[in-house]
Structure formats: structure tokens, C-alpha cells
Amino acid sequence: MVNAGQFRSRQSPPGTGRTAPGKVVMDSGMTKEQFGVVVEQYQKLVYTICYQMVRDHLEAQNLDQETFLAAFTHIDRCREEEMKPWLCRIAANKAKDHLKSAYVRRVIENMTEDALAAMETAIPTYARKIQEKIDGLERIHRAHQFKKWLDSGKIVCRDSYALPQVITPAESIDSIPYSLYEAEKDDMNQEERNLIDVVIGLGNVKWWHRIIERKGFRINGNINHYPDFMIMTHSGRLVLVEFKGDDRDNSDSKMKLELGRQWQAQAGTGYRYFMVFRSKILGIEGAYTMDQFAEIMKEL
Image (tube, rainbow, N blue to C red; front, side, top):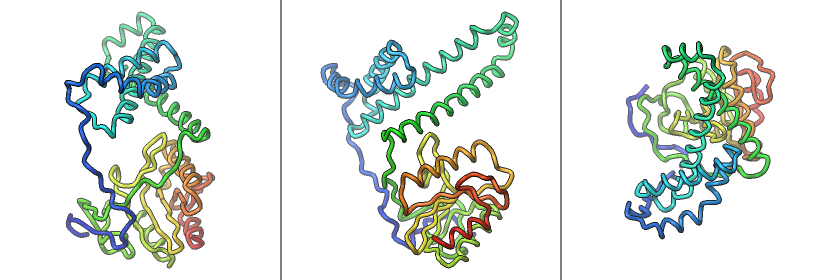
């Protein structure tokens, strides 16, 4: 292990991930006429987002108005090039808040007087249960909508991520050969280190990189998935690997695996995604034991 610091790439990764400073659209003194141009340009988009989520034309119109009212109130927070995604986020949040409140109303309407009295004495417990149910329904809805948009072509996979020239992990390791950077983030458990040892021993790996959780590359579908490793072979194939202990076979693993394989299908023949278990056979496409994964990697 080495101390925290800046570690440069050995391989000159494509792109630098630079961002340019934005230009503030206007201050809070924006006139109604000026904001009217914004409304006219994006009203159809905002309404469509709201309707797709609430499936009610009247409620979608109300949420459309609430979205632009909130945007006008906080217009000084938005940059010109971010106007469209900013409005989309406001609209989606308004719709989600509406759905949550509607669900709570439905729950309360079906409760008996005794249940309501019990709820009043244990509000945090009931609030947690309701929130867990809402979160579960939201995950199901997002997965369904993502698949629908993927099939319809609304969502496409494009080259958009640039590996940084320098990383600065708090703890790092520089003793494993063929790392992309001079040192990689050192948060691997023993089984993950064993996996990397197997991979670099195959002889066909150009470099490997430990993806930094919530900072590095992610597959952004119905969830944000940060795989454990990124591997480049000498043949030019980029491989993403998510390692799981044999006790981690759960719905979260299956959701990540499904998203990873969808990414592979959309990205093209030069890209691969695998979920690797130490020895457990999951019986799902894309999930392999470490030995099975090593045999596949030899061919890449």
C-alpha cells in the first residue's frame, strides 16, 4: 500500500474528462416575457415527462405548471447549457412527489380506525414501511420504463466517458502489475485480489483499473451501476467485471447483471460485461465462476 496522492495513467486513456465553465442564464430578475420563451420551447417535453409518470392528463398539466413555476423561482441556479436537463429533473421530481403523496392517501383510505390510531403512536415505523414500499414500486417502474425506452430507441448507448489522466484515491496500491494508473484504489478484499491475479496471469491483459465507487465509470440505466473492474485486452476489447462473493446472490446482483448485459449488447462487439462468483454457479447468462471466467478471458 502507498500513501494517498495523485497517480497518473500509464496508458494515456482516451479523453481527459475536462469540463468547461458554464454561463449563467440570467439573474433572478428574468422577465416574464423572457421566461415565456423558455416555457414555449420546453413545455411539450415537460408535459410528456409528467404524463409518462402519472398517466393522467389533468395531473400532468398541473405538474407542468408547478415545474415552470419552480424553475422561474430559481432561474438564477441554472446555466444556459443545462436548461433542458434541469427542467427534466424538476418535472420528474414533481411527478415522483405526486405519486408518493397519492400512494400515501390510498394507504390511509384503506386503514381502519384502530390501524390509524396505532399509526399515530408509531409514525416513524409506519413512515419507514411506506417509504420502503414506495421505493420498491419506483424501482419496478424504472426498470420497466428503461426496458421500454431501450426497445423503442429513446435510449441509446454512446461513447461519452473519458478516463481521467490522474486519480487521487485515499488509499492506494502499486504492487499489482499492469494497472492502468501508477497506483490503484486499494479497497479490494482478498477474493477480488485473487481475481485480478488470475486475470493478469492470463498474458493477454494490456491494463486493468479498479473503478472508484460513485466517482469512476458507471452504467447509467434504471440504476447507476459501478462495476468493480475495467480490463483492456491486447486485442482491444474492454471488459467490465463485477465480483460477488458466493453469499451475494440477491435481487440487487441480478438487476446489475441484467443491466450490464444490456450495456454489452448496446455497446458493440468490442465490449463485454461479466459477473463473477468465486465458485457458485448462478445459472444466468453472463454470470460465471472464477474458473469459467478465466477460460473466457483467455479467448478475449
